[in-house]
Image 1 (cartoon, rainbow, N blue to C red):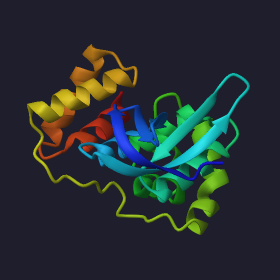
Image 2: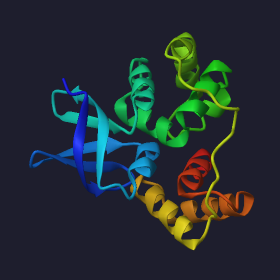
Image 3: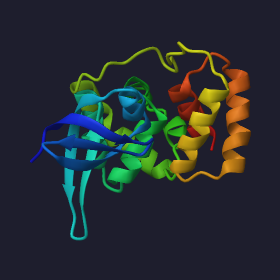
Image 4: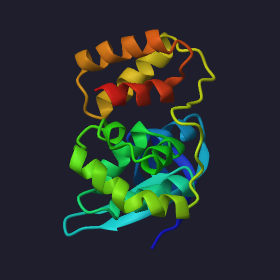
Amino acid sequence: MYDYLNGIIAELTPTYAVVECGGVGYNVAISLQTYCRLEGVERAKVYVHHIVREDAQLLYGFADRTERELFRLLIGVSGVGGGTARVILSTYSPSELANIISSENAVLLKNVKGLGLKTAQKIIVDLRDKVAAAAVPMGEPGSMAATAAANSEAYQEALQALGMLGFGKAASEKVLKRVVKEHPTAEVEELIRLALKQL
């Protein structure tokens, strides 16, 4: 029904954005990947996927078509809903996820919060050929951009984002401190992704 929203980013959090188009504010659920792409932007084109349920109508938003395509592939797997797909895309970048699926690394995929080994294996079996066919760009396994120095501000932003995703403060602080120590040049997005893999 909807392909994209092109408007003002009226509100932005690590889990949702409000995109104002023609005087109407659309509440769009987003991943951490999209959050980091939209941060500091006044206007943006957000690609959306509309889900209609008996009790709700949900809009999921993405900074690019590649992430949306992966989301659609993920929710096409039995047992994977929009919320789970969003957490997967918050934990791994599209290229990392494509690498995990193509290399059939179910153990790494099950590190996503709320995802068991059986579901991880099912995602890989169902999507390994589809991911290749979708031409999702794949980088080197495990490679992540680390362009800004991790500082107290980045740490606090990452901690706040993890809290909004439902993780306890004490556990998040413990993991984030370890991540910052191991990856001192990590930016906010990378800190969050690395922490999600350990929580």
